[in-house]
Length: 569
Image (cartoon, rainbow, N blue to C red; front, side, top):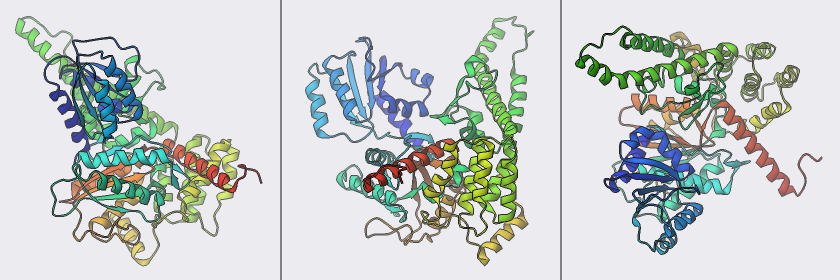
């Protein structure tokens, strides 16, 4: 089960099907992202694709010597653009691929527009999602909820994305969902409806144990997206922001022009692939080794190019050297910037307290430490707010909660009204009233004993004590102990055996910390293959935006139902 490979194979097949000759790849905004995450431009150029165009771009030239490969989402707008294109074709022949199921009526409309008979084929290739890592996919959707309900258009887009993942991986799964979330149930039913309607597409070879789709809701664990991260990929996303594998470094002090935007892709960057899940300390060491290795391979200034064979050897090695030089400067810049932010924002201290709030149960120590850090002028507004949010989620109903006092500290610190309001929104979004599972460990005898033993063995790293709730949920699922009363099956049947192929989907967004947990489960649990997906992949910033959108839309809806005006008493 490899989502990156699935999308790559679709794209290779499209290009192969069009045969030899020069080609243009015609895409829309979303399929451009889908392709760019799994293939670099230079890789596609090697397959005789010399031009990349958008179907909605008005000023394209006529190029009858090119074949057009169209890879588009089956939206009304794309179909309309394609109809206009076929009426006045700019290319010699068209190979059309839709990233999802397209209706018969739209196929008919395209056929009628193709008066000049330039269409060679129309097919459905189910690459309707962003393959971030081999076991991680995203739909790049934010603000999917209005309060506790779906934003209707986004329910249908999420259903399409999720069913296309199932088709790409050739899985017809049984479905379990989180009972406490109405949105999870709605999505499960919506996916089931498509599987029933398109039963011929889902007619895959039966496996002994059917695959399982588990649908979860982000609000069940609002703590994971609020924590600072210390593994490479997660840390880059948290501090710099990863968008379709691209990082914007334009705000880095003294950055050179060619490093203002860099691409980090495990598919074609060996250093990144090897360091994706390593912690910050190990990356520092590996960067140093990479630099030393590079110094050794550097062509000496005084290297004598006396013979033709010397010159040939230099030219042969040069592309490799150039590529390595690019890799070195890119990672040195990225790690250097991460380092700068860690010390500037006191992140070691902030993160240690976050972990204490997330994993331990000592209220008086937590209160003192949060207060102390809020008074530190070098702790940023964002970090101050996330500490108060973690405190509010952790000690929501504690008899001696100091939350009002902490809110005053935020005001004294000059934190904006918008950020202060987010603390209340966060508790509404992921507080005890909403959660279906026990996110905060119950302090029973078993749990205390477990913690005691964990303490004896010593935590590997004070900054990575936290394990996301998803890890516990999957652990229970694999052992056959996940309660049907909390995660019921959709429909009458249930799994008798331990599941082998599991697709987990998180409404409201997954995180790279959860992707790391999945990566480790895939490595350590024989016979189990897990893929994780989410409506998006969050860092703290995007998660706070999601929560604010959800809370705002929810309030507007409540007001509408009451027939009044917001904030009028």
